Image (spheres, one colour):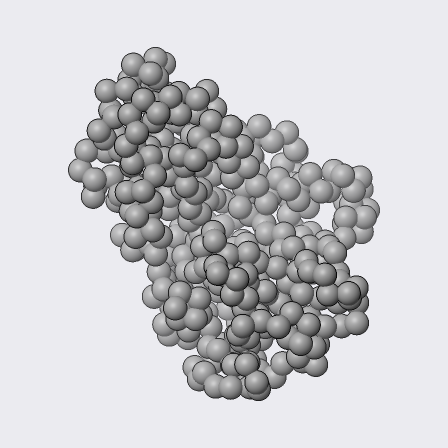
Length: 386
């Protein structure tokens, strides 16, 4: 098993909260990580809400769960059983003990809404992303290129060849559209959502323009927004919001759209190899989105993220609002000799970050100007976890 960076944080949360929720897309490794935690706890009970035999055990859920007060109970795909949340609250309140329930879910809003109604003050959330650079041991240029091209889903990254990796991602996309989304109650035709998803791949890293995309698809703007939210809710897509502050400047108000896993982006664009990727027009935007996902996976849930852009041309790819009011600015370049643009320097003057970095795929960390450093992507962890 590849060691996941989230494991220590989950263990800490299980010691501090009665209920811990682990969310993330399907096939990202939530169940594997939960089973590893179960092995460490020694007496955990694992129940999968997609397995009829496990669902049958919970036909009288109170009678089954109440005697397990001293054991960790793992409930996988728990959003399928919203009726359990009031019962979990009652059981937790009857015997307040940390580390009682670990909830796994692949549809964030459903799980969050259901839990918020019943488990407020009793639950903490963690999101498991696809493999990060440290998890994939992407310390060499070849490994880093493989992670960027194939994406971080274990089934794709660990495949024995690019062809097998592409086949895995194609199957994942089809399964997500034809089985996973309908199982979550999404009533959108798979063909329509596939066309929308593929279209977004061409707009990766650009501002959301509902009327333009809706017009291309032949649907209304509200329908296009519903499609967008559906993919975001299932961790396939990120809407990066614009920086919001009273700077007395005209700021862009639309979010930027990124497909969260670079491998799925490349599959939708039929990019079969790393060499093909380097010559493709999406390469720069793909690298930008990949670095953003790496950075946010390192930061965790206590960090706010946005981009900064003004009508006058000032622009910063990623602004991070860290704990204790610490603000970081990240500009992302794919060149080996990164040079910030005039718009970046103007943005630094506007938002006044505590530190600023130009992230690039090189090896050397060095200053570029007052308060700004060139930062190899491999050193992101040192900066964001330090």
